[in-house]
Image 1 (cartoon, rainbow, N blue to C red):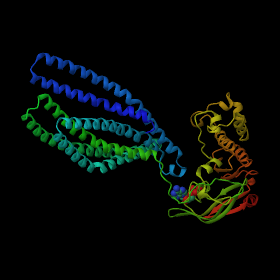
Image 2 (image 1 turned 30 degrees about the vertical axis):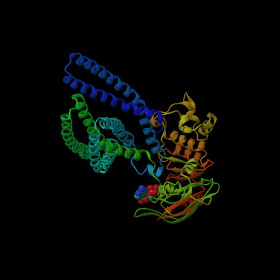
Image 3 (image 1 turned 135 degrees about the horizontal axis):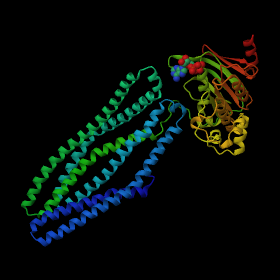
Length: 543
Ligand code: ADP
């Protein structure tokens, strides 16, 4: 409906072949009728008219195709963009609930379903509806009683087809789900191919893959058999109606209608019934493709809690965690924990593996909100804060830095409109000067796929520059230096501790003379978080 005028054009284009169909029907009726007339001149005239109508039909077909194509192309492009937008704009929480391959399946397989089922159904529905309406009107003009019989027959066909509707939609959805599963399975196999080969377990995966393909094909077969069966049953009803109409027409012949009239009426009743038989399964297919459209484009409401998220993330003073408890199902990670994060201070999270360090970062960065207790920033409950507002104010630095195949400039600015001076300053503050002076194009040097042409330290510096330019109030760091050598690690840690942001970091490395600069240590032990002064904590460690 976004392109109303072009949709009307599309509608007309779908109806053009209807004109052709009736011209052809009429030409055939005239040809057969000419036998009754018995004149050669009349026959030749009719032949010429028929040839003319056939040529007209071809022209109409070509015009119709051209009129339809651009509307279809642009609408499909919109669907792709909407599906892409939904994925990109989903919250981290809902995005991470599904495998990435599910989204790829939505973008490829589901859009193909829409392309095939939706547009093919739509054109068929419009075309056949046109045929149905025009046939019925023409029959009504020729013989009103016969039109009533045809109308009654179409009602019976409609009711029968309704019986199939629900299951057609359900079967189509199952095909879509199976497509997602197949994409995830295949991707797992390909991602782990090296391990599979090294451990010689390809065969197990081959049989798993076969099962996955068989599952998908079976669901497609179910759908095809069901929609086909539906068509066959409707066809059977259609034939029954045709027999009735032939009996009725023979009675009209007795009353003396011409051969042309009779032939035309046979064809019209044929068109009337077969158009409805052709259209009804298409309506169900159309509805099922609309369901798929909804699935890949509509946002799911976040009903996890009833609070409205309309507050801004304003962090001028402190984040207060009070009586916080959190569990993954049966596994309790935090039990009644309370502490505070003060602005601009640097916090180091310590604790054995599995203690809950990453979980604490996920709670403080709003990735999880199914905790009990409170997390408040300057007195505002986390659950009332707009996710976007938090995202605008925080940055993450992980062990793995994702880099785009683009310039250093864009990798730092992340496509936001920063000036060259701003980017350069952030690059310098994060210690990227030596890299920039080495590169011929400086900031405009292209990085290879995921930054293959950078060292681990340089990659980390780019992610620090991203945080600096964003002027993030809060910086979460998870093992940023653990893959770097001692010397580089020290330098990165030093840079991080010199920043103006509040830092909450996980690191198992200890850099003498640097790590002590953390203001506080949050030590996680047995579901509790104990806060220590940085200096004191490390003095004790040293002792
Ligand atoms: P750390 O970062 O300290 O190594 P985590 O915060 O990753 O620990 O995990 C804390 C505990 O919670 C661990 O026992 C881990 O197995 C469990 N855990 C982590 N993530 C999940 C999850 N998504 N579902 C269930 N359990 C999890």
